[in-house]
Length: 301
Image 1 (cartoon, helix red, strand yellow):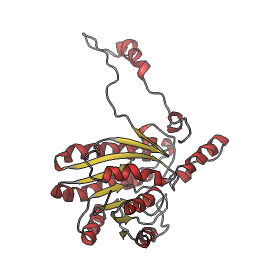
Image 2: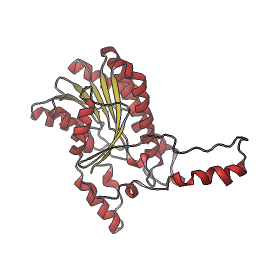
Image 3: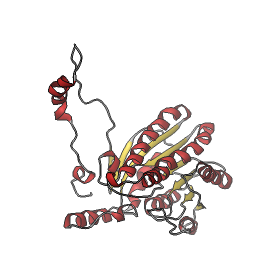
Image 4: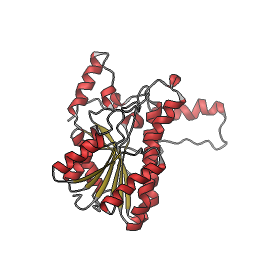
């Protein structure tokens, strides 16, 4: 399905990114595997991670090249896209998957940890997408797949930085979809459930948490690939501006904000009438303070 296409996968050194890079190559794409080789907290980890994925792809008969620059730097993001052009002559798709975690409760969240996570997830997605956008515009085609998270779409403890970044990616994707539709460019988000370095940091302090982690381990990252590949395929049936969730063998279309209910008062509102009338009238539609695990209560299929 991706024959003769060139796809950049960021964060391709492990987990979901590695699986997507390998599966894109199996689908016929030439892959630029980007990974700077760091741990989830941002320290140097494995500087050969991207090259290892490239060697796997080549050993299986595919085409790939490593790019070890950081997506968080605009110039280096430009160089990653340049690697695709220099090596393969074009670029057809981007999977924005690179990320780090620096969790902590909001009242303890440092400016440094907030900033560093946004720079990799949100700014990184912008930097790579912006570098690819002019190539897509000029050729009249292209597709972006951005990784978001149900932690952002629904909620989670101790992840203000990660949640802000991943929700920002949703808005970024919609903006790209709107602005570049006229050029034949598509942009979508996937919120993946899969066992990876990101989820390996989930707490296992209680029997319930242990059971949750065991369920995650059943969800291999390769399950994300069929949807991602279809969105990158260039097929006219592929949508744009959507948010999907993949959970093992389930593919879900996620909602986007739309008005649920409105109230009006001809004479206008006062703080008192808002409390007495407006808020009680809408209370049935208020969202509870839930986390992802409260919404996805059924076992993975």
